[in-house]
Image (cartoon, rainbow, N blue to C red):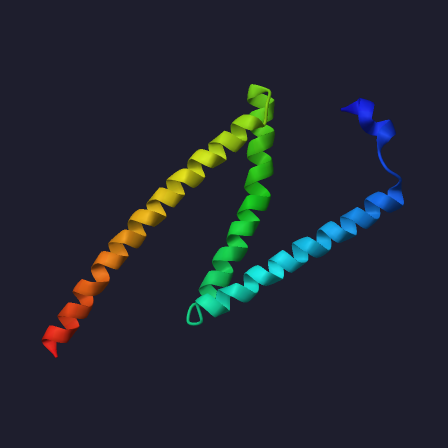
Length: 116
């Protein structure tokens, strides 16, 4: 990696690319927080908090886990595998909870209709 230090572009080019990168990140962040009230108008505060917490957790946890995996096992790739497994488990859990909620909704509606 140190062999490429002499081949780095000049500072003004790197600075310009970083500004473009930050503009793109800002646009994506703004788009995400614009979608939340559109899809979930009644739960804006809750979901904005969840999105912010997930971003904070990813910004704190990911570098620490990758650094620990590199220190212990010699490669940060194991940290990415660990996050992939955790993400897969979270996705399966979310799918199960969603399926359970969809099953419970008709029952609840049926109970309300019968009782009225």
